[in-house]
Image 1 (tube, rainbow, N blue to C red):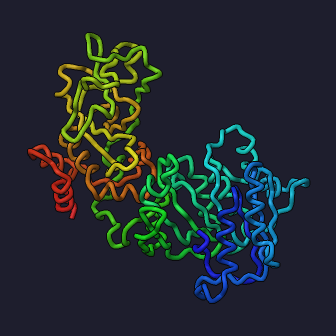
Image 2: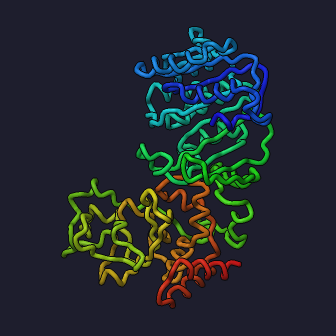
Image 3: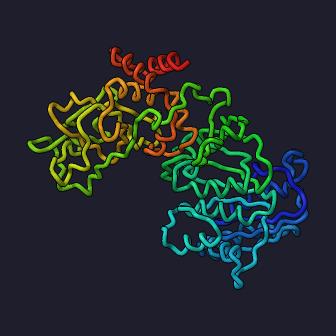
Length: 465
């Protein structure tokens, strides 16, 4: 992270918010104070003086932070200040013009490993941020937004943060905030959650990002590595239009993991679900809310209830004998509105395991599996594709499933989502082949004895070439 800053000289005003024991500031200072013979000119931080503002609210960490910064006390040009106060309140008070606020400078550099925690909509933090025009849902994005707001022109911000801000509706105001005020210079992606952060229960990728306040957006440097050894690091340069599409109103931030030439989806894949007359929804049955209507096994007066456990590579397994999940739900006036008419559907699991090979895992729901049942229940851990809450034509359901299970689409999806979950909103953002092409794919798939990943990818490549 310290080495991601570009060469600089003059005076440095460094911000480390959520400083902990000072590891990031120490790394920055080690680079800045290294003997000239030990650093290349391209890495030169030649500051006349460095002033540091380190914020850490945890009183148990402040003595260690003090000790870390004291190691640099013999260097006359380094002046550290430790604030054992709440960074959000300190920054928003100053930015909103509070007469009693502690004055803060414009920072030339910021290096951050901010805390990760959701911010309640009516919390003091949320209200304080709102006063400064920042609308966001997590402490980490609040810290980054405030660092941007406090940055000097051309100020550099390097932070390690979850990738969750890159997509989804909740982070759209935050994305707009940073994209209006900064340019993206560099993003580093750790491709393995378990290896890079083996001491933490990390459910999504973290990225290191370098933003620059103001400036002209140019190519974005993308580096990737499996883990924190960086021994296999790859580097590519991408046009900004491949990172944030000009046509995307949601301002999703894509993080390509391969060379630019291999990233593009075929130009024949440009239809939205609305163009195709298809909708995608989250399964409406939230089991704990309808618990009294759930049944372990089907019986008179029930209809099938489908969970991810009912789908695997060989098809639909229902009922799932020995499963901990119920297999049926009562069909009555209290449950009717949560059910769908029997028919062909395409379903996609919302959650995948941490290191699963695929993110998008789609399956066909075949009504023949369920005898004479008039309705189906889809549990909340599934997304389902439908036509106005009715089933799809059989060939369309098979074609859509085949398309979503292609390697091309799975890799494309990973460009803009670091989550282990696939939400209906994410599936709406994907572009699809035409309805006719999907039906053609489906008719072909229905004639095959067995579909392997290689066969799917080869057929899709041929049909959309």
